Image (cartoon, rainbow, N blue to C red; front, side, top):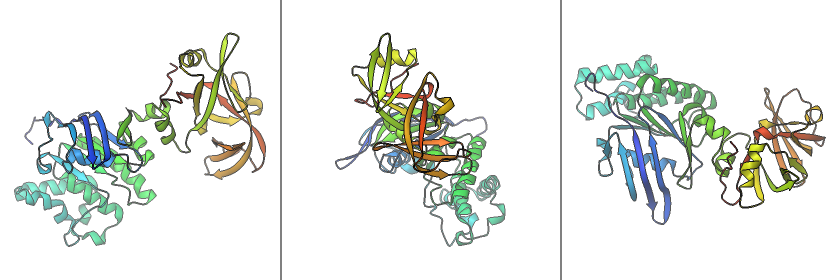
Length: 374
């Protein structure tokens, strides 16, 4: 790329749909990946995220809609001419070639001059810490090293967009954390657009500048990791994001004198004026209330005015060292809380749980959409 010339590397889906027979893999998807952004496509298996990535790569053709890379519509552009590099879950390295030759192979196929080819390979090796491994074969490398070679093979191409499909899935937990950090640093160094596919919400929350959450091929929410966590757009996002998952209560709205309250199986949820105003506009008297495990505490001294309290039984205690995940039973339903590890709880013990109204999430049970209270 000539000095002073900047590649425009935004990616736009304009009402993109992809059918495989009668199966709708991507459903009327519209979103824009900004130039030099790290965007994560997140969702469960079968949600359409990998298909969306393959549509950008040119490995699949859209049934309907338009895909734009930079300022160019690429629907009819071959994959090799889209100025992209893709990293798969399977490293797909050539086993008979050295690391150096694996890195240089695509450049050789494109007839890049030898001196420039060597320069690109050595630069990629330096960025990824592969200098000492260039003469080794893939069988002599660890899983993390092989993944870095796969990344290096993409870097040498100097693409305008990097596409990554579950690239860390084959690594153990420690290597996933390490490689995750390397990818974040790599993005900052290269200042290139990254589109990253994963089903792992920890990867999505820690790596993405924004997250696009998909379900059944449709976009559910597109925003920052913090916004996704603190203000999920609907019940699917609320349930999918967070570990342990958000707790849900089916409640009924009742008016008492000049105030609105929500009641559910023996617990009364006090509502702030903003929450009451938003819920009063619902066409139904029913509401789904969500509360995250870390926003649940034990009652007793904390059970003061403005707090919802529920009597429960300790069902299971899971100690994680820095915290404990506790499952409580309330009749036929279960509630999960993240509590301080210093709290001594025994299975079968009866306790009071407290829910603070400022951390409650409200959803329309008919549409599943968030009820905005601010």
